[in-house]
Structure formats: C-alpha cells, structure tokens
Image (tube, rainbow, N blue to C red):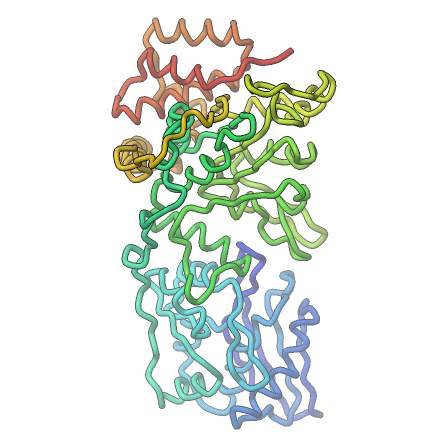
Amino acid sequence: MISKINSIAINWIVSDLIEVEVDINAWLPSFTIVWLPDQWVQESKERLRSALKSSNSKLPTSRITVNLAPADIKKSGPNFDLAIAVWILNHEWIIEDDFLLDSIFVWELSLDWKLRKISWALPTTIWAKEKWFKRIFLPLENSREASIIPGIDVIWIKDLKDLVDILNKDKPLEITPSYDFRKNKEEDFLENKYDLKYILWQNHAKRALEIAASWGHNIIMSWPPGSWKTMLSRAFSTILPDLTIDEAIEVSKIYSISGLLWVDNPIITKRPFRTVHHTASAVSIIWWGRNAKPGEISLAHKWVLFLDEVLEFNKSVLEVLRQPIEDWEITVNRINASLTYPAKFILVWAMNPCPCGFLSDPDKDCICSFKQVENYRSRLSWPLIDRIDIFIEVPKVKTSDFKVNEKYENATTSKIIKEKVEKARVMQLSRFKNTKITFNSEMSTKEINKYCSLDLESENILKQAISSLNLSARAYYRILKLSRTIADLEWCSDIKKEHILEALSFRKREEK
C-alpha cells in the first residue's frame, strides 16, 4: 500500500512542496527514509515511535519505506514528523483522499505526542496559500502568526490525539480566526521618552529626519559629544509611517524564519529599528548562524538600520553595506545553497568628527593630530559616502540654552511630524500605483526622468552645484529624489527651486 501526504521543505524564505510517499509491505520489519534526508529527518523514526505510543497508536510491524520526493531537494529539520505520522494514521483509518490532497502537514512531534512550536509558520502559510491548498495544520502556538494570511484555513492542533480525532471526524476542525491587523497594532504615541517634542533644539536636524522618513533617504549625523545625535536617532522611530498589511507580512516573514516571533507577538506591527554595535562583524550584519539566517540588514527591512559611532566600526564592516544600499537585497552564498534576502532599509549613522570628538566644538580644543583625524575619517570611503542622501553637522547644545521647568506643551510632537510624513506617503503611493515602487528613494533613472522634471532655473542651479561641489552622477540623481520628497512634504506636484536648494543644503562636498 502506497500513500502520499503533502509537506514542505523550507530553505529559509524559499519553500518547496515535498510529497511524503510511504510504502508498507509484509517483509521483515524495518523503517527507512530515503532521498536526501539529513540526520534530523532520520531521527524522525525514533520521535514517531514514542509519539505514536503516547497517543495509543503504534508503528506497523512491517517493512516501512518513506520517500521524500522530489529527490533533488535536500530535506532538513523535523518538518516531516507530522506528515509521516498522518500516513501511519491513514493506514489505520480510511481518510478521504481529497482532504489529504488539500491539506499541508508540517512541524515537529515531541516524544509525548505534543506538537512543538517552531519557526517558519508564516512563510509556510504564505506558500501554501499561493499553491491553492485549502488548509494547513499547525501547532496552537503558531496559529495566530499564520492567521493573518487570508484565503486559507489555519487549523490548530495541540497534539497527535487532536489530529487523530479530526481525521476520525470525532472532532470538528478548529479554524483560527483571522488576525485583525488594525485592531492589534501597538499604540505608537503613548508617553514616549523619545518624542521629538522633548528635543527643543536642533530644528535643522529634526527637519532632516522628517525628510528622511518621507521616504527612505539615508542620513549621517556628524556632531561633537552632547549634540543629542543618539537621542535624535532614537526619536526617528517615532515619525516613521505605519506599516501596511502587505509590508507587515513581508517583515514578519523575515522575523518568522529567524525565530523572532512569539505567541504574544505573532506579527510585526511597527517598522523595525535595528541598532548595531560597533563590535559587530561583517558576517553578523549579513547573516548569522550555521544555516545563514537573515542578518541585521534584513531584519531592518522596511526600515531603519542604526549605526551609532559609525567610525568606530571596522572599515570592512561598513564596506559590505555598499551593495545592499543600491540593490535592496543581499545574496548569501553557502556551500549547500545560495540565499537571497531582502534588505530595503534606511541607513542612519551617528558619528563624532574625530577620535576625541571635539574637532568642531568651539568650546573645547581637539587633541587629535591631523593624521589621526585623517585615519579616523578614512574608514568611510567616498563611494560609500556618495550613497548617503542627507548630511547634518550641528554643534552641541550649550548648557546656557537650558531653562528651569522647561515647558514642552508648545513643541512640535512626533505625532504631528508623522502626520506630515503619512500625508507625503499618500502622494507617493498614488504616484507609484500598480508598480513595485513604494517610495521615492527606490526610483530608477526612468522614474526620475518622469517624476522629477525641473524648470530651466532649477536645472541650472542643480548643475552649477554639482560642478562646484564636485559631486558624482549618482549624487545628481540622489539630489533629484530628495527634492521630490521635499516637494511631497509641501504637497507640491512640481519640484521648485526652493526644494532643490534645500536638498543641496544636505549634501557633502567631495574631498580630494
């Protein structure tokens, strides 16, 4: 007797259908799993023996051969435990073939026949829906995570006995209610210690952050100690636009395969803000773990990757960011696989101007030599700097600026700034409707020529600035995209001279 049950082989964000084919005959008792199973899959035999015993079932005392097809896909992990167990139950009871063909069975069995919560529930459910399966069987702990995907029934089961009862029709299918994304979104503007209203100075910097958030422009903040650059960077997260449902699924998929979703946090509802310490290695930023899980640049997908004290980083770490800044993705080549992860993020850097930090401080002398400053700054190569849209240099806040019992009621709050950002976003989403582009910094030359046209005066100003500042062609197009964003914040359909001038005010002259 040969039966087929559907399961999935997961290669991080890529999934493949695996048909679990089982043959039983009257030869000498044995249990064999064939076609590229790794050690984890081979260990399924012992887990199944104990789990079936705990559920008052048992393995047939016959020759059992399990074939995981197709043969050319490597099978790893405990994903096939449940599918093999379903076949054994199908051997004991007659189950409707249509029910099995329309269902996906994945996940690991424990020795006491319960199902363990593991990663990959969300990408697996997305894949199953795309392949037109009607239902997916998941552990209870994974059900909320998967229920955000419409168009497929998410059936939660606690243990193997639940599955036996369902297959015997002694228990109805427990379909998890759809996850209400809007209802379950976190409240952004409860009392937030990083609200921009608490920063009563640095208006130029706050304006730069507003532009960067609207949408997707990389930013460097170079100030001496005491300038509040770290607090401003943290406050940046409070003005980022809300995630759409599609973006939330896209981000949560990455966190799911990384094992970073929990029962109480089944989906990412706020834009990621990832902070990397300067001791991090280049490899950890790209990927981590033996199986190359997504690294920090992918966990920052949609939106922020924050590097504080960026010039303390090893130069090789910074250089690995050059390619994903342009391509919005990173490809990891391993011995047994080549994996491509999304990496569409805003790069936010904060740095001191020199090793001691006081090079541009009017109140304290810098103790660094010219050579020390030169070596310190050389960690940022010009090709990398050329990929940055906004540069800010602001002196530190003086103690004489502080006032006793400072009042914040009349200060501009993060909520007000975020509303402007969201308004600009509406304009951009309308502009790029029916395309894969979602914000201005993603525009290619084709879109720039279409949406960033200039009048003669503005064009002359830009060309003169490019020449006098000795900027590259890449910088020319980045200035145009930044000007387009500034115009969107003003709700202007055309880019005007003042938008070009403001964009130029954030540029850095090339140093020879």
